[in-house]
Image (cartoon, rainbow, N blue to C red; front, side, top):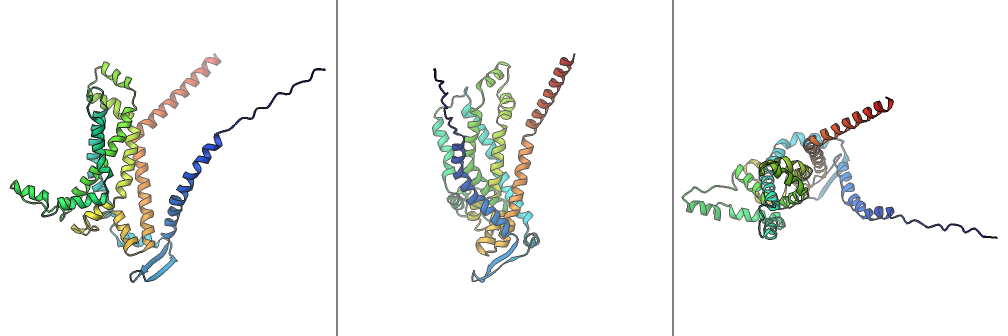
Length: 330
């Protein structure tokens, strides 16, 4: 009698679970250091909790609901501090994105063939490695009343400028520092985006007779739009969190009627100086909401064409399906 041989079962190895296992450290870190403090901030915003007499007497925590939000709006000129933050961010971001785009296109242009590119990339990125406080101290010394900049102006027969004593002088210095610290990082990011574009698209544009500006506006800009959205949103978030540069340069915003006081500097006054955790939590929640709304608005605005393209593609698929159904019935 012939014996039937049972087929041997081969155990399949599933590697899908390892992906989840490797993600565990990230989620643990994110939960402990981001979600938990965020939840704690929302919790503290609903309580009266502060220290008086130099941190010797503690009051609270006492639940008061939304009273901290009402008090902050009545007590502080939040609109002014928000406008200070946005003005200094815009003044630094506009030249930053223009210069970064120009450098990214020039460095990746195959026709220009710029020599010593690694050296130039290193040089433009180096300011990003310098501490913001050191940058602020350097600019404070350079642009002080008796500093080298005013000395150079006087040698040219010009009147010295009180850079650190007037409103727009301080704002220009803060914007200039933010530009110098971050344009190198933005250039590297945009270079990576431009280098990811298929070279055949530029060759096709050249064959069609497009000049450099037309290739930039019709090929480069539409294809790097997602990276531009990312750059704008991250820069906006960083701008709303502006603290160290104006804090050091203006000695805590105590110049020109607090014209350089930012939202985070106000938050530091609540938490670091007066130790009013209720006000600090309420202001942090407001900043979180404003950042989320502005970030979503920027993302929605810059991706309008993509949404319209997807909508058009769906309509075309629907029409094609209806035509196929009509042909099958016939």
